[in-house]
Length: 76
Image 1 (cartoon, rainbow, N blue to C red):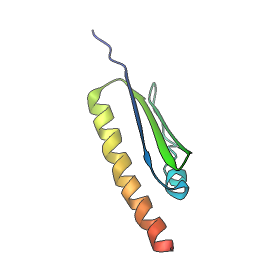
Image 2: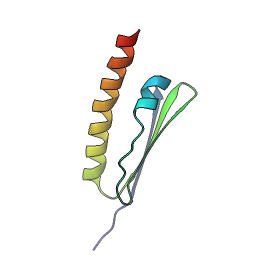
Image 3: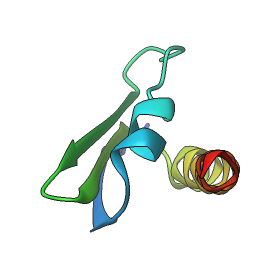
Image 4: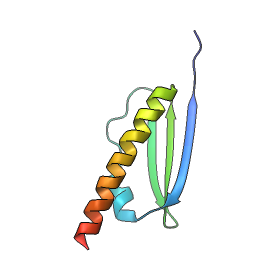
């Protein structure tokens, strides 16, 4: 059996309010999803063991990001 380890990192401009709302609270065995806000950017680090898992995580992440962004913009 072949085991795969994926370490995906992404950084882009964002707002602190959005990043704070994206903290993950349901992490499974061996899965790491870490979001931080630094220098006006969101820094995302995902560690998982399959491409399918990474795809699902990113899909959920961007759906949640868009929702958080809409909520922050409504508060303005």
